[in-house]
Length: 434
Image (tube, rainbow, N blue to C red; front, side):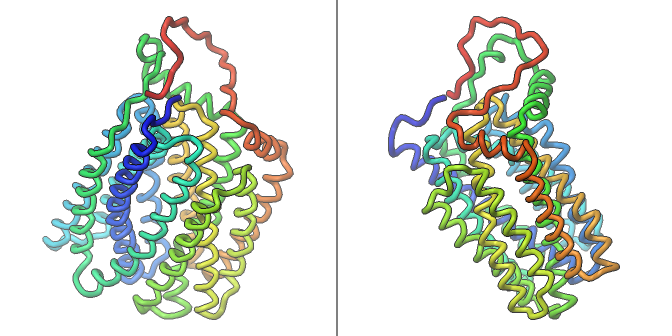
C-alpha cells in the first residue's frame, strides 16, 4: 500500500477532488429537496413519500452489488465520472419532459430510480478512491473535512432550493444540477488516480464472478465488518427513514409555509456543519467503534425528544442536535472501514455499505410511510427512538459488539478470513495500491 510521495501533491489532489464533489453534491441536493418538497406540497401523502423513498434507494442496492466489484477492478475515477454524467443526463431529460407538460408522478419516480442506480456505482468508487490519494494518518481528518463540506452544502442547498422553487420553477433547479455536475466532472479529470494493481487479475486467476463471491464471503466471514454494516443499517431504518417524515410533521403540526420546511432542513444542516468542523479539528476517538456506539445512543434519545416536541422551535432545536451528531457517526464509520479493510476489497465493502443504505431506507419508509397516514409522525419518532435504544444495548452486550470494539482498537487491517476454496498459485507480487 503506497501513499503520495510529494507532501504537497496529495493536498492539491484532495482539494481539487473535494471541490469537484462539492459542486456535484450541491446539484444533487437541490434536486433532492425540490422533488421532496414538490411531493410534500402537492400530495401531502406519506404513502407517496414512501414510494419515492423506495424508488430513490432500492435501485442503488441492486447496482451496488456490481458497483463494488467494478470499483475493485476498474478505474475508480472513470466510474465516478460515468455515474455523474449519467445522473446529469437523466436530470436534463426530466427537466425537458416537465417543461413539455409531462409532470406525472411516475416520471419523477423513474428519474429518482435512475439517479439511485448511478449512486450505486458512484458511492463505492468514491469511498474506495479517497484512501488512494490521502495518507492513512490523515484519513479521519480528511473524512471530517469532507463531512463538513457536505454539511455546508446541506446548509446552502435548502435555502437555494427554496429560492429557486419559489421564484423560478422546479425545472430551473434541474438545469442547475446539470451545470454543477459538469463542473464536478471537469475538476475530477484534473486529479490523477492510479488504477488498483492486483496480482490475481494480472495472472488471470480471478474473474468477475469470483470477485463478487470473494466480496460476499469476506463480509459474511468478517465479524467486524458485519457488525459495522448492521449498526449502519439499523440507524438508517430507525433514524434516517423516519427523518424523511419530518417535513410531513412540520406541515401537519406547524403549517405548510415553505420557510418552515426550509428552517427544518437548515437546523439539521447547521448542526451537521458544526459537527463536521469539530470532527475535522479534533480527529475523533482512537477507537472509532466507541464513537459509533455513543453517537447511536444519543440519536435514540434525541429522536424521542423530537417526537415529544410540541413547540416548533423546540422541534427545530432537536433537529439541530441530531444533525450535530451525524458526523460523529458517519465519519468514524467510513474511516474505520478504510483503515481496516484491505485496499483490494475496499470497493466491494463499500458496495455493501451502499446496499445497506439503499435497502434500509426503503424498508424503513415502507413501514413508517403508510403508518404516517394512520398515526402521528410524533408517535412514530418516539417508537423509533425507543427501538434504537434497545439496539444500542444489544450491540454492546453481544459478543460481536465487544469483538468489534477490540478489533477497532488494534492496529493494522482486520485479518482476511480463511477460505474453504483453494487458491491457485501465482508468481505475481501481492496486490498493492499503485
